[in-house]
Image (cartoon, rainbow, N blue to C red; front, top):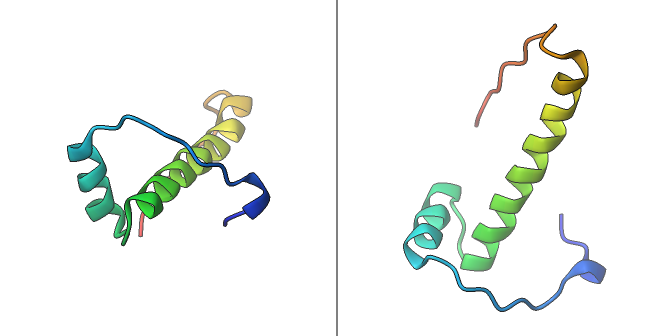
Length: 66
C-alpha cells in the first residue's frame, strides 16, 4: 500500500474529533494510519464509480462492506 518514494511530510490543520472518530471507525492504531486508510477508501470509491459513470446507470453495483 505504501510507496516510500511518494511519502512526504505534510503539516495539516485537522479537526481532532473527526480524526479520533475516523481512527476508531477504521480500526487504525495511529492517526497517520487512519488518514492513509481514509485516503485509500476515497481512491477506491472513485475507481468503483468510474465504470458506473461510463454505463450511465445501465447496470447496478452493490457495495459490500467488511
